[in-house]
Length: 499
Ligand SMILES: Nc1ncnc2c1ncn2[C@@H]1O[C@H](COP(=O)(O)OP(=O)(O)O)[C@@H](O)[C@H]1O
Ligand SMILES: O=C(CO)[C@@H](O)[C@H](O)COP(=O)(O)O
Image 1 (cartoon, rainbow, N blue to C red):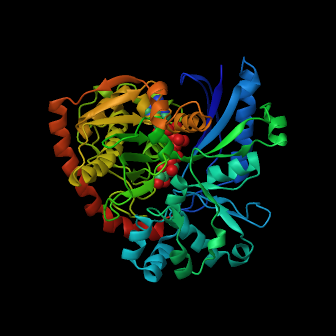
Image 2 (tube, rainbow, N blue to C red):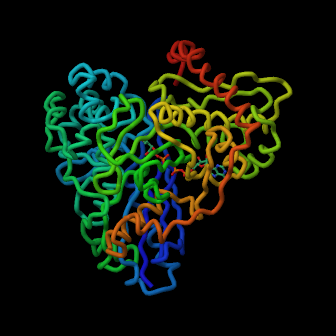
Image 3 (cartoon, rainbow, N blue to C red):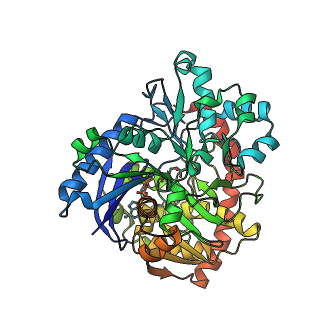
């Protein structure tokens, strides 16, 4: 039997899947690492932590593997997007990585519009200038840490750095490059014009490759450390959302997923690079060659639930905390939550907005709060679905992936709030499975990613909308949408009192 490994470098952990030629996940390993949040709005990680934990995960996978290690033919990556890893001339990181959920760069986003012009910027990058994207982070370092920036030779994204350490070859794939704000998304090349207008040398941008491209073999040092064969091929891999799309079969027009990981994402396939959403949703290159996708992002989806659990129920597991939320009525007995605990992206690109519980009553219990957190996260994702529908997309079936897809009550809430059938796949490991599929396709096991999806992916369950709930949720969604406007100014004024 032959195998491939999908490495999903997430925000909370690296998850590794060993997958056989039929698409069965035969082994799984997860290794976590900390988030460094020294100030409000700051979010960093140490690149060395990613490398150490990926190597430790690969070693554990190989130790548990019953077959012959030479049967593991290749590996590929899915990576948290946008994080800036700035490298010196010897490809050593110059500082901690600044992550996708770090929102310190509001002035740099303004600088981008001032110097490039908003219309031209959206024309080239197909996206707004957002705090989470890589370019404003580069400008922040240039402005705030000039000595360090002077030593910078190049930059990469999180999984590119880990891949570099495994192979000693440096690349970035189109799907991740699209999230830097330096790529001309339709032309698939670095934008000389944006670099010139912002006085950045284009030489800091690494060579571009397709996600399924073979970029080399693992080094003998990594082979020694992990037990893998030196013949193991490494394929470039993609942005976690592009890989999530591959791993849930979002490979043709009309297919959509909702992912609840640390962030929340609603993503829909786009066959061409020229649909105009006026920057209301993100528009990126897919991990499938020459395809695209549009997506809306809730900055803190699973992160909101995580925050709630850590702060108010730290002794409970997710299962214990959520046990019984299905018995709480729709609307959590009049409690409404907005998941803006680290700011928001879609549809409100606002780094200063913060979360609220509206309607707290002395009769509310922790179960009401837990249900309102799940509902608030799902309402936020529904705002992205509404944008897609307003732009003519028909969305009647949605694949649900990520940690949030583990809970059946939440899956039913998604069906009722999105008013769509929710399909759970046999493996909810979207991005890790997508990375494994890139390695399988890259290894020549299949003639296309679609062929691979036909063999690897299988629906497990479908949740259908319950019409009485759909009706109540439509009323609640209208109330939910008001909370942003009603609390915006208050939150902006509170900004100066934050850490
Ligand atoms: N049993 C569960 N039920 C509901 N939600 C869960 C459960 N386990 C984890 N989650 C949510 O899923 C999130 C992690 O999802 P995951 O897809 O693994 O994230 P990431 O790739 O960002 O690290 C957690 O933050 C949590 O909110
Ligand atoms: O910023 C984005 C997408 O634009 C995030 O989706 C990150 O890519 C992190 O994803 P998770 O850790 O939540 O999977």
